[in-house]
Image 1 (tube, helix red, strand yellow):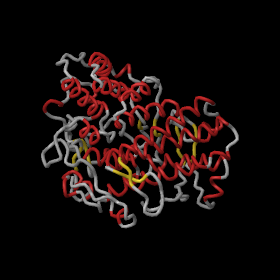
Image 2: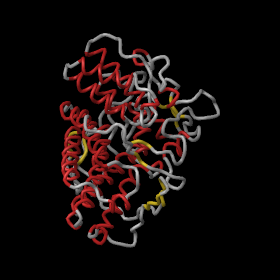
Image 3: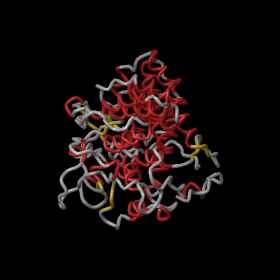
Image 4: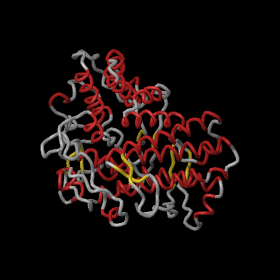
Length: 432
């Protein structure tokens, strides 16, 4: 990996949320040592982590993960073939090369977020107030984990360290490393709650204690550590929100670049591209939440991407319930798996903090691991639409692909040429 160093030229955009003004401060007039040697400098860098991850427009992880995950699994379609990188992702297989712009951005920005989070975490000793220090540790750990977790969802391997010819590690190691850092942060935050000073200076939206546990649960599930996933998911308060905040200056990237027009991508159809044994159940109230009628004049996609200032959840209550359902099912405990699955199936929009509810009858299918896991997969695909998880889920659940007609057209993405040209340890690109 090229040595991704601290990027100080952060865009100085004002983000408002809940009548509170927060800044993504522009520290471009300072050098790295000045920034990391003060509490306010580290908090500024924490705000920059969120900006890079969520608010960088088409250069954000939110946009590129949604696009790559949706286009490789037929959740999304390309509306204009002139968007060549997206079009090639929708075709998949050998059409996705190491020069694809979406793939390059997905790789590079996650590497930058991870590297800059490491710099923050390495310099927290300068912070004297325990609550403020723990806020910084928790926040940086969250974005470090999001970066590593996203890389693990789309690439077979990636470096854990920055440097010349950095070695690559398996994706499972990326997930385990993310979880280990989150566990350290959880212990810190439990010892001294996040201070009011930190909360006043950080961009609003991220619930640090809940998000730490939600991400431990998510990435432990992906790594196959079902006991840890169950324990962490149980610690999340499902009545509390945690979200990426936007406004008319710092815009929701998926709405601004895709769902707010009919030029780039939109859902394949009002079934979210799901067919056969995983087609949405009749009357599923999540479908009108995530899609609108098939009018040719507007994009079918809605959900959390309806306006420039629409907040995007870091995780959903339904994700935590489905994590528990899947973990129980994979452990052979079908009674508990079905009990957790039923909490998702019967949940109504009115009882969900984000208004996401299927309002369906309880599960009545076969009480076999295969049937229950298929129902869990279907509900993940609907409940977590456009979150970028479907490629990871499709592999993990053994769905068909990769092929020109299967449910996914790739297994993993190629390593960008910008990486292979600068790192002799870059592995051979996967065939598909």
